[in-house]
Image (tube, rainbow, N blue to C red; front, side, top):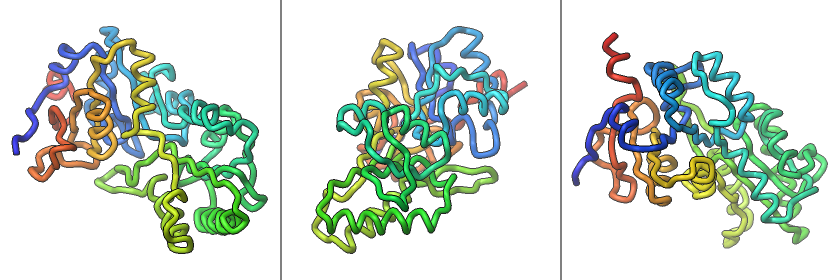
Length: 287
């Protein structure tokens, strides 16, 4: 199996009209910017190079995320941030969920995404029509999961329709000092496992997954950029690379997050176009 060619960020800037950048594991971790990120963003802003952040994070509105990035020294405007939470609006319209009562697992920004989509945020203890997992934090974890599972069981037994929505399919994310944590996708797996244990043979009792690797987030990038000649730079094979390949985009696997771009065990359907150690500019790295 041929390994993907090593490439530099300078080559990518010249070769592609638009860069798509993942956030966690590429530009930032849970505590700050990764080495080289500030220099790259400064250069892209200075040169006017089009770029967008494609993030599965549904816990922060673009304005909140932009403020956080600025605090990390990354001058990224909210208009450049495309989040999985922002996909809820189209999902709610398509599935006629305006006015639906929604149990939201996540912080206030996750709830605001749901309100912006037309949902009515309610406590999971009071019954609901829709479950939206926006994040792994911002709520009492065990108590909320227990309440959601209990109400879902009751809804199945009452033969009521269940709407389960997962903007962020990621299972884990990179933290500082080589640490890792679970994210929304792992919570969805817990709830799905509980439903399948009690109701075997019901494959319909599962979450609708919206973010990478699914197409809608890439469609939004295409809409904003006006060109399909984009390259996706990410750190996860199952989301960033798989999603880009399925959408017909070239991709770059970076070694600062989840996956190791030097491994020889990447399946053919997950092989990136290129691999890269980090997104730092060479002149910045040597300065």
